[in-house]
Image (cartoon, rainbow, N blue to C red; front, side):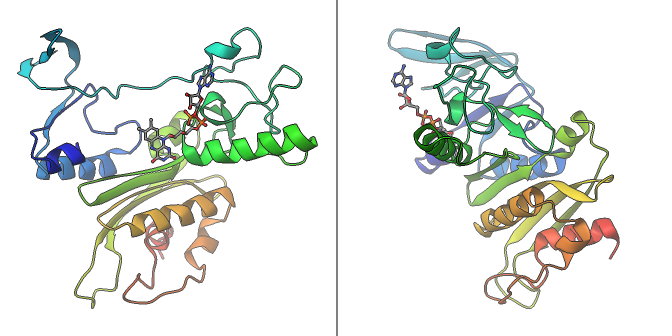
Length: 284
Ligand SMILES: Cc1cc2nc3c(=O)[nH]c(=O)nc-3n(C[C@H](O)[C@H](O)[C@H](O)COP(=O)(O)OP(=O)(O)OC[C@H]3O[C@@H](n4cnc5c(N)ncnc54)[C@H](O)[C@@H]3O)c2cc1C
């Protein structure tokens, strides 16, 4: 959508869900992405299912959706993905996600066959179950583990992944590390959350960028289980890397608030946005 808008095209975005990226973000953050899309000029058709396309061999003429027939020149579908496991069906065991089941050494159920990348499901330590995470970060790590172990025997174990991703649109960067509040509750985690809007630099800096942050915490363990960030600065990516380290490292929320981060007004704020959100939760 971003590239097409820049090329001067009119963009219509259809989603059967009531919010953009509703599976990946809780409503507070999805709402900001919604506004960013609208402000950039995307015509949003949310909660509107596409039933089919009308056209000829020469191309598509219109989209048949619940709200009517919309004339378009071309269509991009992004309605989901599946692991490509046809090659090994019946040879190795598949997991309940439909991807290949592997152990921590990336060994499949068939001796001598290793699997990695988008083809496998991995252990999520936050939910305690397997999850399909088709992301490059998981692919390269599982690939490294599979390759080393295939060559040298059980040398290195892959302990799992928490599910991190980031994307960008029209100057906004939005991503998450770990679980949303909805995902945490679905995993029967007794979760609480805090949501804040702040800026990347101290108030006395003339040029600042906004950062909207939601932290999700397991009340029982006092550990962070998820962080979602939307901001109009690429610094959002760095904060998500930090979030992933805090989550995967099992740092308690009290300790996370007081971690000694480097600060310089031109680059960041003396309280980083994750600490600020945690302070809200701890009433500090
Ligand atoms: C549009 C798009 C954008 C993405 N952006 C990001 C991003 O920003 N960040 C991120 O983390 N991830 C992103 N991803 C996901 C990322 O690309 C994948 O997670 C990653 O490439 C998976 O690596 P892989 O090696 O498992 O699979 P692939 O990269 O898909 O490689 C599999 C290869 O196997 C080949 N193959 C398949 N079947 C056979 C066969 N029978 N015989 C021989 N060869 C075969 C395929 O042709 C392919 O080349 C994106 C994916 C897409 C589609």
